[in-house]
Length: 315
Image (cartoon, rainbow, N blue to C red):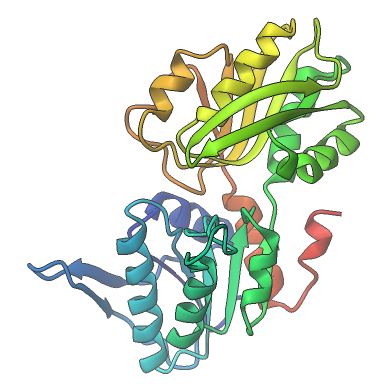
């Protein structure tokens, strides 16, 4: 398929994923330089002609979140001022997605603020994967494509478990819809963990809804941050007689004590994707398995460019 007048650019957050996407599309990664002044200010220089070109900027806003977000905004502005034909921000991971509503008096809705910043920078379309809150799509007045890593996980899980289907477990009530979708497509059973969270980043497991005794279990979530919820859920499943416990999550944020908690937990393996680069301390460890979403993102970009259906990727 022809990709005339198309270019893929990459921020510094995940150059490996951007290169894999460009390879799938049979396109080179566009030449640009993103650097910092001595005081930390971000500077971007587009080093090739993009006048009239449809540009796709690959940049997850992962840690350091503020630096990567600012780099994305500056890159979009540079492309806009270079007369790019259209600019699509491909954000495999959307930072600040957890701040999608006022959870207490006098608190911000930062996910909306980020949407406003992106819109003001001049972006024409946004692509993101497995948003923490799907309603973030409504914060934008430009087209927004919400992708799911489900096909990548299912292609890995089906041959691994064969006919002996695991129980898919939601670590909290908010993840039931996601977990039900996996269980339905795999023809597997569903379980739910009732969780009470006394304050941010601290969770307490109460009880499990569903039968997990002598069964393999797969905990499903959109991201793993400090891994408190995940490891507490794994211990709760172990206490109820689960045979083997796995976890699958799209975004390996893995901040603070997350890696140590996972290593010390009953989890046999954590399966994640390359939307965010895995921290160096987790690379090569037996408990972590990384699947690539480059083909999925590349196919979505191809369909967007040719005005084909994106939703059919997940039906």
